[in-house]
Image 1 (tube, rainbow, N blue to C red):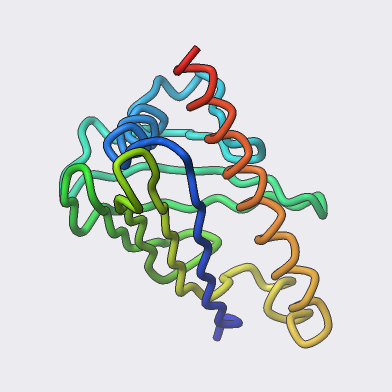
Image 2 (spheres, rainbow, N blue to C red):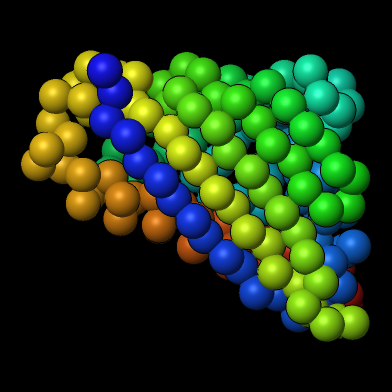
Amino acid sequence: MGAAYSFLSRWSLDVPARRCWEEIERMLRADAAAPTWWPGVELVTPPSRLAAGEHLVLAVRSPLGYRLRVRLELVHVDPGRALSAASTGDLRGSGRVEVAAAGPESSIVTFRWDVATERRWMNATAWALRPAFERAHAHVMRAGERGLRAELEQGQG
């Protein structure tokens, strides 16, 4: 049985929610060979469209040196607002991304992940390495926030 983790990340951005959603959608629909604004996250296989039942594959490079590969099935898409996915591969569980207006020119992007690790070495060492795995997740999320912020600022110029 995998080690369970629940993560919650909130990004506060000084752009309208519509613009945040557009950029997240653009990244998820990009050609797999295109670089993303999210350091450490590679879109291996993009979905053909953002709709329930579609699949995508992400590879996530941890700052600790390991890579996680996850296959996501979109289970719900509320265009412009949220998407939910079921995850298999190295992380089994579910995730949700929500984009909400925090004002006319600001937004909050919220990520929720409830997953269990599937890799044997991660499960065997979770008792000792859980804090390091949690810090690695926080690092990847902060890098994504910085990357999205820079992408959005560049697009305004």
